[in-house]
Image 1 (tube, rainbow, N blue to C red):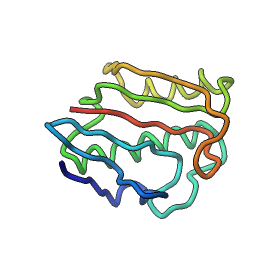
Image 2: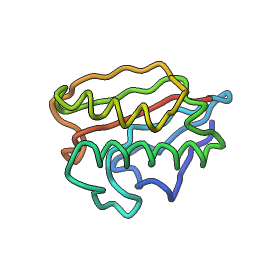
Image 3: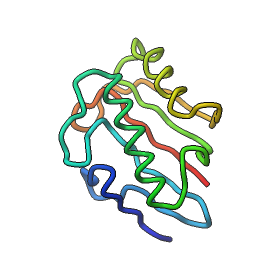
Length: 122
């Protein structure tokens, strides 16, 4: 197993790493809308979703992977009212690639984020 740390994503806010690679598979921890310096990308769910996805891109790149190699993603929202907006941003990020996905509503996310996204990639 190999722990992944990228300066293109914020440091972990708890006792975990940004990702682990095992057997050629990258298991990315959830990313929220914090920039790599630890400040919020913005208050809105759209801005936070875009940043969370860019953070995932940074972690995947550090693990010698990419968004095109994502097998499965999980999206956590604090309100399903944001589903359409986040789905549009998600679709734009992945382009023609369509990994498997789950999207669930959570009552609260770390640092009171509006969205958190994790993924598994080759």
